[in-house]
Image (cartoon, rainbow, N blue to C red; front, side, top):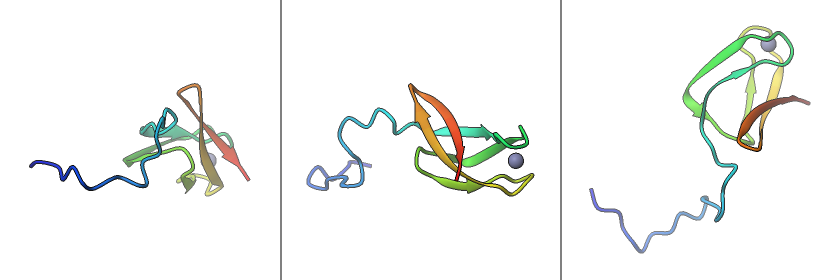
Length: 69
Ligand SMILES: [Zn+2]
């Protein structure tokens, strides 16, 4: 399907090198691997499926790091 060239993706920041999609993350608290079927992006807030701790996804040099609050 052709994309409408007049429509601009405003939520797509230019030079978004950090906008990488990850398929899973490792919990820094319990070391559990949490698969993310819908993908995980920098800035996303999730809860570990195992220990339930709230985590924020950050990306440093292309690698995913989960931060606790
Ligand atoms: Zn955990």
